[in-house]
Every structure is written in C-alpha cells, then in structure tokens.
Length: 186
Image (cartoon, rainbow, N blue to C red; front, side, top):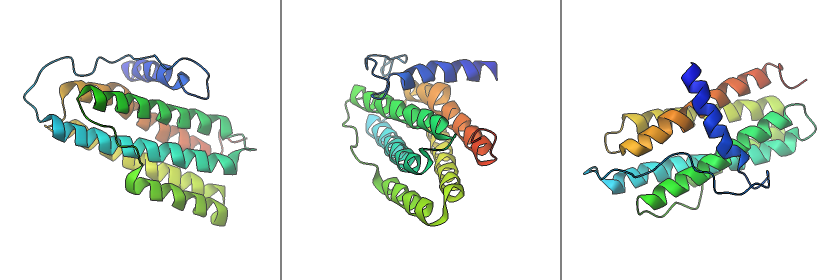
C-alpha cells in the first residue's frame, strides 16, 4: 500500500502541472519507449489511444458535473480529480507520440457518456451525477486492467499504467465513494 501511495503522489505532481494551476507543462516522470522491442507498436498505440479517449471523456464529464457541484463542498475534490485526468491525457498523448503514433483528439463513445452524465445531473440531481462518475471510473479501472494484461502493450506503457494511471483510478473510486456518502461534501 505504501508504494502505491508514493506512486500516486508522483502522479499527482503531473496533475499540479495543469492549465488551471498556471505552472509550466514540462513535468515528465516516466521514460516512455526507452527500450527497443518486437511487440507490435501499432497495437500498443491503439490501446493507449483507447485509454486516452477514456481520459478525455473523464475530463469532459468532471467539467460538466462541476457545474452542478460548483457551490458544494465536493467541488475541490472533483476539481482535483478532473485535473488528474487532464494530466493523464497529457501523459498518454506524450506516450503515443513517443511510439510514433498520433494521439486521438476526441473522447470517442465515452464523450457521449459525458453528455449523459450532464443530463442525469440536471434531471435527477447530484447523487445521479456522482453515481455516473463512479461508473466512469470503474470502466477506466477495467480498461487499465485489460491494458496491463494485454501482451501487445509495451513494458514501458505497462509501467506507466501500473505505477501511475491504474492506482490513480483506484484512488478516484475511493474518493467518489467517500463523497457520495457525504464524508467530504459537508
């Protein structure tokens, strides 16, 4: 558990480097693509672009939900989670470029999910929006787990996922559970 916390802390340094923080965007902690390998880079690029779409969708979803929670005590935590997803977007974009690929610019099918979250928040309130965020994070956890198990994903990518993105997603799920139960929203 301690090493996971240290990894999350390292990843949080990437979230500090967000447009909202006003800091420079030159923070990079993981050497990506440092070894040559015979693994199919195109397949790995595809997996990373899929993860990138999920992260873009998460940024969109949190941004929409924050409109609903702007006056709520949960807003600072939700902002932190959004910023961490924005940092993950930059990290995955860099990763795809370093493999020689072109990062996907959209959020794919999960972008439609973001719009559904906004409608749910408007129709059913904060609890529905929080449940939708949890659903999105759970989907992200499954995507990261599948990427870790995928033999075509390069070791450097797996290191980034296992030490930063996957633990961060688990922490997001725990944070959302606390928020939903009112521990942080007061």
